[in-house]
Structure formats: C-alpha cells, structure tokens
Image (cartoon, rainbow, N blue to C red):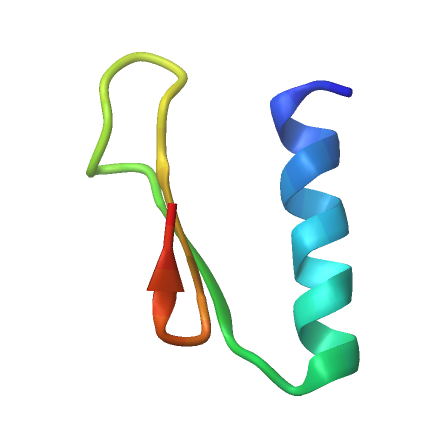
Length: 42
C-alpha cells in the first residue's frame, strides 16, 4: 500500500463513520503529510 492508497482508505472509513478527514501537506517534509481524522491526527 502506498501513501495515496492509505489516504483513500482513511477517507472512506471517515466518511462511513461521519468523521471529517483533512490532509495537510504544508505540515510535513517531502512526501510526509499530517492527516487529521475527526479530532485525531497522525
């Protein structure tokens, strides 16, 4: 699984659970990003 597939799966899970999903590409270096799912981040 690559990064794009992971983000796609997380968005699908978030949508099914009614959670917002945000990918912040400005917070990270290179291909790293910050992913927010509801109130959690990773």
